[in-house]
Length: 361
Image (cartoon, rainbow, N blue to C red; front, side, top):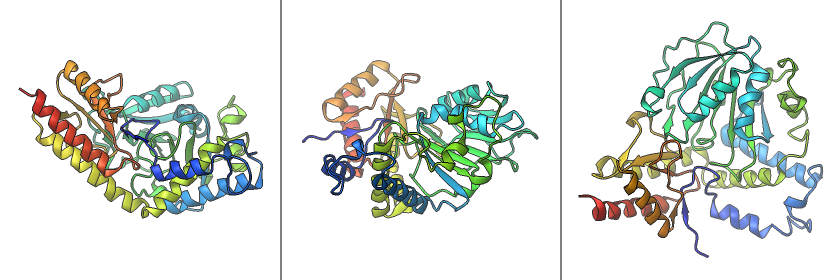
């Protein structure tokens, strides 16, 4: 078996140990004689898988008892609508637009009420996080929304915005479980699992219980009400059962690795190796303001579209795959999520150094 180093932004690399474990259970999950993929979501066995996954996530993130954990389908895109449908009581919400996904969420919210763009970094191609210490927060805003880690542009909120007492809602898709977080600072945080937690096809939402009410916008479909899913323990309809099972395995792996404090140190070490090289390189350049750099997604360029393409092609030939930047920005991007081993980042930097020696004039 020849595994590559997969730098994809999502669906992304999963821990090899988890994949082997799942492979061993593919035909027979713990003596049931069937795969989790075939199992009824109403069975006692699956209920145990679901409840154990939730408890492990609660342990990892120290989620308080007054927050609900929901395993939902539709990815982050569905949350762009579900959030205003459930939380926009005054029909007003403030958005900090720091990338493509925050922009899409902002545009979607405008369908349901008044969405205010109270800060943005569009002026410099989303290459920084704006100062959010004294924002023009709307007095009647129901919440302030951020995308905490911007997968495409490689920026991260290292300090949460001052929402002036308003509810904070955050899309944490690409930094989910990469470091400890204080859940109590958020009214709602959510993330697609396909970047840092599991296979594609699910989103996990962590919501303060007092926000989960029957009071949704008129016309909100039953399926789009958080209360429906909370009351049914994420089993209102057939959930993405296999994805929940895989996420549960990743949660156990994270616990075994030492939890989120350990992951933060590990992620900082990996990112430092790559950023240190970029800072000294005469060919490759990082595209993000230093203080706003993400630990998870590292975009970089050579300054030449032809050379960028040559690098991506040559890297793939030696097993360093999915390094092409998002189609909207070009260049390269290395996504170095929790499951990317240190050796993968070291191998990438060695290859970059060699490529620089061969191509830099």
